Length: 75
Image (cartoon, rainbow, N blue to C red; front, side):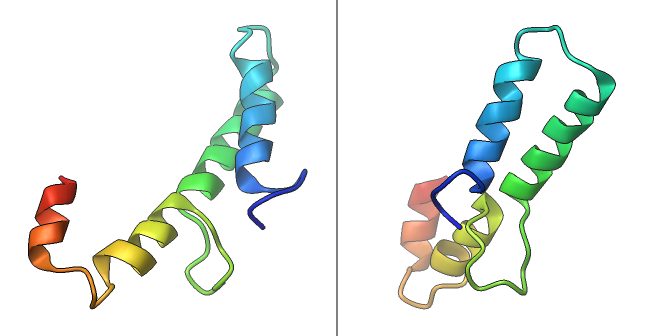
C-alpha cells in the first residue's frame, strides 16, 4: 500500500518522530528498526510492495528498457 495510515513510509515517519526526540523506549527503537527494514527491503513475492529495493529492482535494475548507459548515469 503506497498511501494511507498503514503505508510503509507513514509507519516509518510516525515512529521516527518518536525516536528522534531521544526519549523513547527499547520497544519503540525496535519498532523503528523493523519499520526501516520493511521500508527498504520489502517482500519480493508481493507485486504490490513499494519498498525501495523492490522499486529499484523492478523498474531500474531488471527493466529491459533501461540501457546500461542509463544505469551508469544513475550512479
